[in-house]
Image (cartoon, rainbow over all chains, first blue to last red; front, top):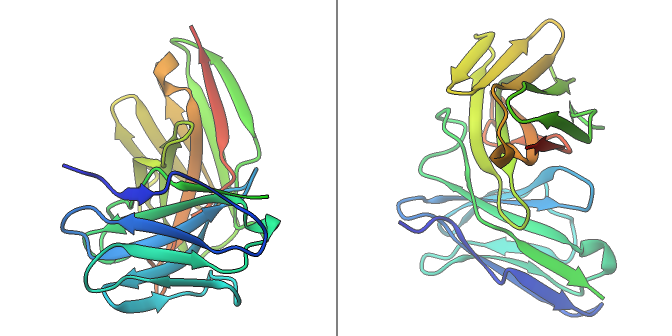
Length: 117
Length: 114
């Protein structure tokens, strides 16, 4: 019974390169959320997606960041032209229904740790 | 603007004693509160939650208390065990259109000494 799977677990990029982080939700979950944890900070909401739809991207930086959750395959968080300030842990979470519609918790993956040199 | 505050970055207790982790919030629209536990290099895992219509929720060794008037909640762990050593995050969400968003505090590192 696999949980939320994220890869890569660790990613090192040089400034200006692209980073792609992948997330496969738990089986039966169709709602995906991405959170970012900067050093010494709590997790901050970035984006909420359902299959083929971005529902809420209000937490995404306006430039360089994008997310998708295609009909087939994992959700992808893409960061173009990375800068040192993008170094963080990126966590993906999933839920079987809209997280606000029930009082159940989100199920988080182990995170992808991005280091920008 | 930090809407969920965990003012103690760390807490150390002896095995068998009580651990009390505190959390304050500023947004009166929050109506559901959760505690997550996180081990190093792992993702947060859900621990316990409480609705704003309650003032206490208990699950085994874990109890969460909510004081709405003070906008304060606390997590009690009794008795504390070495395996409880982890970072504990307080999180909150509101009702309305964005009720799926969790707002997290910065976390409290709990160390339980044998």
